[in-house]
Image (cartoon, rainbow, N blue to C red; front, side, top):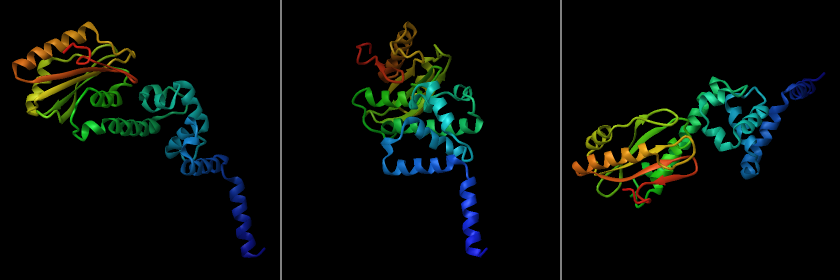
Length: 239
């Protein structure tokens, strides 16, 4: 057999023995470049999973994740322990998912990080939903602003359980004084999906507001967020 025929034969055998999913994944990439909206949610997940598992058929796992969590967004924002409960999802993928989740959170926070002037609660609400709206436990964050309502800092001041987080007014005020802020916007999440403030939320807001007034600080709003909605104390006339 001539060298040319031998090379062609070797290439043919290699193609025939290649895993079937490699060709499928390549076709997905081509479709992604030509018509990305045409890809189903599980197909996008296939490509994401394939970045970490290049030698594995990721279609079954992608479909299992969508079936388990219900949507692409829920899969992307799921907690590591919940993801690892799905067979085939291991520590390597959990690390990759943490990266993806952080990228999404920072994209949602972009208007806040770019120090836009806050004319209403929506900008901070969007940032809070992106950062903490999907979390399985409560977290309390504070946006600190200058006298023109531009962001100076956006920081977490407390992390709690599924239904509460312990935050003291002095922690919020100490942070505001540290950054020489003129005003604060409070934000925390309700993992249960209902942004309606609890009695404890109302009392904490009153305490922080009273203490802030004594120091000449403005409490501009307190936002309670979930994945798809938020409650504004300022809009509800509670501040």
